[in-house]
Image (cartoon, rainbow, N blue to C red; front, side, top):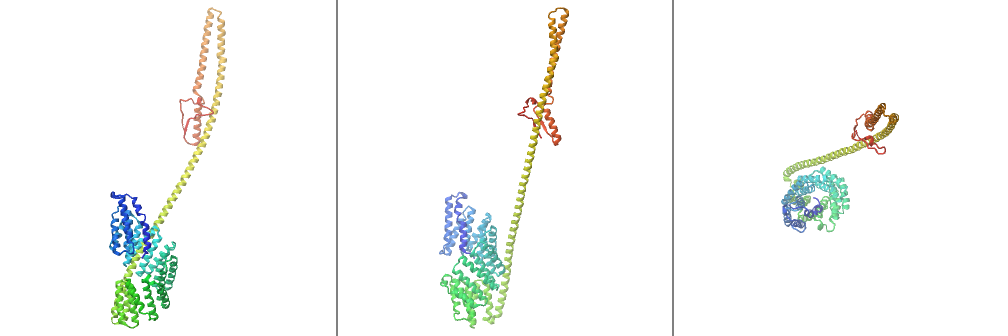
Length: 599
């Protein structure tokens, strides 16, 4: 079973901040925060009182029952689940199995609803310990396995290793030695990197026990040596070292090296105050030492060692130990050829074995009974064969159950690994698509920028060309103006001025004459002046018409440029301008106001 102090420490960590968390939550049903705080204080006090060693079993059960009733009134489901989980652990260590199952079941349902995987894992762990304590090994293994899955999924290797050690012990007890060895190896893989020395001792001890049961004694001793190394690193103390020496002595006992085995048992037995500090270990050591002496023929201290061991075991209610001690006493009497006493001790051993539900010890007793009571050999043999077959079938069925649970666990792990790989794959694909999108965006943006830059450069070139055309147009306009001015000047000088001069001279000559001919001449001169007037009007009209036509003007130049660009670049340009403006008059060669051009 898991070290209670370790489990208690883990639970205390989970529960320490609960009152502060609850005070921050809104209480359903309008209950005030003061009342809620009082409720929490009461629950905490009752739980802490139940942990005191001096408290009796009934008082402990009453305290935990009150704490459960008060916790059931809490409206905050998350907080309620935390308290239920704490109560489940405390009740698992008590004798109130009914209340434990009630609290544990409620806590399991609530933690599943809340999807609280931490609480769920610890609750399965409690159930595993509960069934293991009552030797319901398949149920114990099932719940240990469920807890281990949850711890592994969360990456809690320390808790996972602890539960794996429990699973290995269950497998050992039902005879699934290979499975137990594999499970302990899995525990080592998780615990070694974390340097969990105390738990590594448990793993190596179980491996030593399994190797001993498989008669692989050299391997068993090697595993025990590893366990001893970690006992020192974990600083577990002298009593743990003495227990280890007792285990090593049993290996040598199995190997038939009873003298060497006895040396280990004597070292343990002679440790000062061992009886007071660990009576269970002391009684077992006496029993083991007595058996080695029996095999060595050293009968001086026999059956005294067995009888003394029995008294200690009786005082501490070690029923399994009592079955073993009475069996050893029977072996001693059989060696002394006192069949009557031997038979009486075997009957007593048989009674204790039944009370302890120790079928393995029952098989040993049935195997020895024909030697003590030859007259009933057939009956004993049939009982032995029947029990042995039954046990083999039970162990086979149990191993199959555990194998199915292991298979489901392995399948669960494989499924998780597959899901993890799929998540990694999809994450990689998403990342690749994201990077490709960024690359495509950068490339397209760069291309757009390049195209925009090229267009700007082309637009600048076009503007420069327009500017050059405007300059040329201005020069042509100036040249046209000069030519037109010269022509008008010549016409005015040669035509209008000459005719006006002629009319003036004629009129001057006619001023002195009054005859009819003079009158005719004046009339002709007047007509000549009218003609000059008409000619001046015609010249003025021509000037206005030329200005109106704006031959080779600014807009026409732009339209010619537009046509040239469309033909060379193979795209259409929309050219818009305000027709009411005089673009030729608006042209400034230092500051241009250009029409809009759209591509």
